[in-house]
Length: 412
Image (cartoon, rainbow, N blue to C red):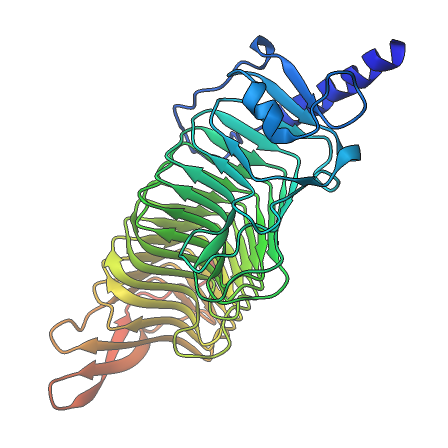
């Protein structure tokens, strides 16, 4: 009897550790989060040798009530299941490296269709491989709020080449926390994505995840007001790609060694890219860059370290953006305004780029504003930024000026 109490005491400690510090306070991301009260529910056990323990996770889910915790032991792993969670529960694995849920290529590994769900401590493998777009995922969150997926490993071993698929998908879901997970594949494959937000998912926090070897690490399609904080996106084809969205915040991430580029917006409006380390992205193709803003307007790019990207540190095909207080160094072209105009490039450090700045604009929209930047060394005279104006019949060489270059490096 004594050993049973000791075992349950250890389980309680693991559960409390899984729940502790779920929501970081330093992001500035405020939400009206509806928290479950852990002490109000019962604990159901899966695996192990205890009397009354379930052998299948889905059986425990089916017999749980809202507010209950399901604790899954590692000694009965792997669990060959496709789990559907349709009630507000905590689902916690004993050890994320040892508690494996294997979808056996039959369906999503975990599908969540209700609010207030917490999942932590698992390795998930082998979802359904489908010919249909977005029919394959390790975790699928559908029309739900306040879902947390935390401290887990999502491993895509095999994907279908003909359809988009993901490690985690949020569809029309809000106030969710995807935190401290490792999302990986064996190799970069066509249309494989790490974390996907779609169908108007809003006010979600995607933070402290490591994502690598995907076609796109994080992909956002027509979603707004989300925060992406302290993620490590590396060795993907693209690190983070927003395909239309408003008011998204990308802050304090490390984004490097992505072959096709670090961050790309296709129709990004009024979003913030700040405090990121964006290095060694791109292989020299004309569409590769550290940061690329294509379409949209009103974005704020500040306090980033952008270096060794090929060919562009920042590529702007957009209007009315502010680029300020960035360290832009050792890129082929530091900032390229590629048909982008009315952008303000102010108070940046340009250091040892092959070209610090360059532009190609239309004859009616010929102006970007370069002001108070540091250009390799202290400058007492205006600094020329060379480029081209493209007319209907001719291409003209043109010059913009930074009329007030900085005399010393900015602290960034």
